[in-house]
Image 1 (tube, rainbow, N blue to C red):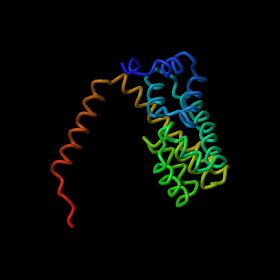
Image 2: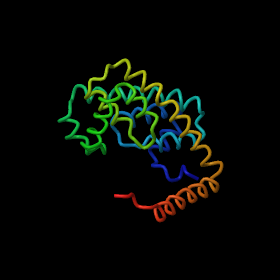
Image 3: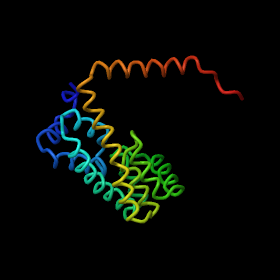
Length: 190
């Protein structure tokens, strides 16, 4: 079962502290602590935390944590972010790319950044602060954008527990197809 591979602190936070644990995990993940949100959300689903709690308290935690990242970008500025970013796994290149994306797309960049998996919430929050994106659209897009991600990853966590053998088989097929594609694809014409 997936829960045995979770860090004990994360398992205890989600399993023993209920809604507050979900709120705190997502707040910490979205602000400064380098915890992948995918693990937090999928773990909550796997542990049987209700979908309503995951969405409600996860959204509140992510939104408030995002506000911390926004404030860091807005008030601490690039020099501080570049100095401490390495401790939270944010490189100057991450910030540059997110900042350029935020300048190009405005509030939409926050909404897109929240929905996309694998990209840490905090990168887009900090970039929104650095680019001085207006605060109200930032909060609205953070709040709206995190909901689909929470639902999908929580459902994935539940499926992972219920259908472990099928999930493993599905992942193996996807990885196999990826390698077949890489091996047999034609190189681009030059």
